Length: 214
Image (cartoon, rainbow, N blue to C red):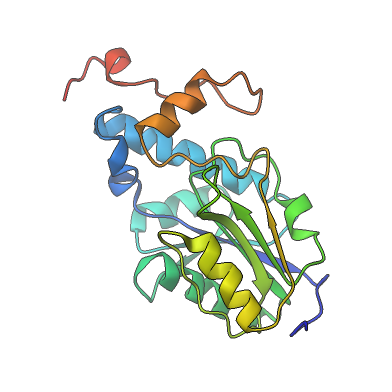
C-alpha cells in the first residue's frame, strides 16, 4: 500500500565524499591525484544525469560544496555521519521543500546519462542494483515514508525488506548505465576495457600513465 502518491516532483540527492578521500580501494590502480580526478569525473557525470530534476549534493566537504556550486547545483552540508546519514539529510530537505519523492543516487557512476527513466517508474520504491546485484546504486522512495536506509553490504536485500515491512511496492532493476559503479580495481579495469559508448575515455588510466608508482 502506497504511503504517498508517486508522480510528484523528485529531489535527486547525491551524497559526495571529499574527492581527496574518495575511491581509496583504487589506491593500487590510480595515483592520489588521479583518484581525485576520477571521483570528480564520475560525480560530474551524475550531476549532468539529473538534468530536468531538482538536485542536491550532500557532503561534509568544503571542496565538494564549492564544486557543486560551480556546476549550479544546490549543496547541503551534511549533519549526520556516513552515507545513511547523508540520505537522511537529503530526505529532510525533500520534505522541507514539499516534494513527494526523493532519489538517492551514488556519485560513482561513470556511465550515468539520465535519471529520468528511473524516477518516472510508478512503483513506491525503485532500486537500481549494482552490477553484482547486491548493492543499491539508486534508491527512489516517497519522501514521507519512515524508511530506514541501509546502505552498505547487501543493501539491495535490506532495502527490499524495508520496503516490504512498510507495505510498499518495490521495483528492483538492473540498469544498463546506472548499475555500473566502480568500487575496486576489477571494476575499473572492466570499465576501461568496455566498448560501451556511454563510457567516457577521457579519464585517468592508471599509474603507468601518470609516471607515479606505489
